[in-house]
Figure 1 (cartoon, one colour):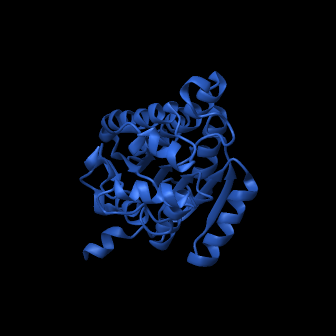
Figure 2 (tube, helix red, strand yellow):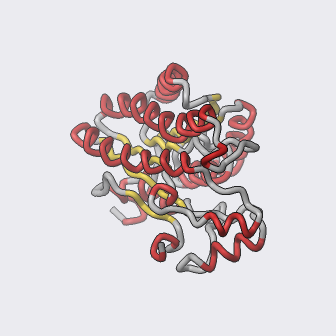
Figure 3 (cartoon, one colour):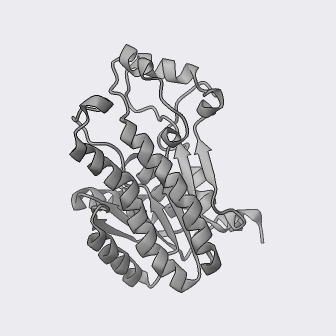
Amino acid sequence: MSIFDSFSLAGKVALVTGGARTLGYDMADALADAGADLVITSRELAHAEAAAEKLRAARGVEVLPLALDVRQHDAVAAAAIQARAWQGHIDVLINNAGGGIPGRPTDLFARAPEDIEALIGVNLTGALFCCQEVGRIMAEQRSGKIINIASIAGLVGRDRAMYHRTGLTQQPVDYAAAKAGVIGLTLDMAAYLAPFGVYVNCISPGGFERGQPPAFVQAYSERTALGRMGRDGIDIKGAALFLASAASDYVTGHNLVLDGGFVLWH
């Protein structure tokens, strides 16, 4: 078999939570390009449907859009059942749903308890719920690949002065706590599911350039070994495909740091 064949996902079904935009969409697109049919979720069904239409047109694959709030366990369990019933199997899960809550205070001493709980719910508890319910299906199949999306926020502390100087909202401490939890979740889920033939890995992206103030982009890039921020549409695709495909069949419990070398200097 050619090494290129090991990256093929023909005949596979991949479930991507938070797959309607940015990194989630990029990873879904990479898997579709490799031949996988997709289940795309978003909290807003219209967003999932719009992404599904784009992916069908661009890649010629089948796509099932679903509305899903990963913080709701019953909803996660129902989505997992629906996704499996669609084509009879789920081969890849990417736990990408996450992010922050726009418009809310992010400074630790100004954070509302309900905002902390909501952020941890979507970034950590939701990933655990998805691992539990889709992992159950994969364990029954005796096969599957789970990719959790963590962050370098779970690996290093932030210099908030860089945010203050450049007018960018700082990252909340609870985000770092949640993403560190995702890394820990990945390690123990990998150990738990390995006897069932299920692989669990994670990707920890660094900062991606998305219209931040130019001063912030420059300051961040100067602290990154490769001298730039990540690029949407490009930089996460290869990592996701590697971990989703047979090319990574001797890799589990690994945290792939995708940050241009930012953590090397921290």
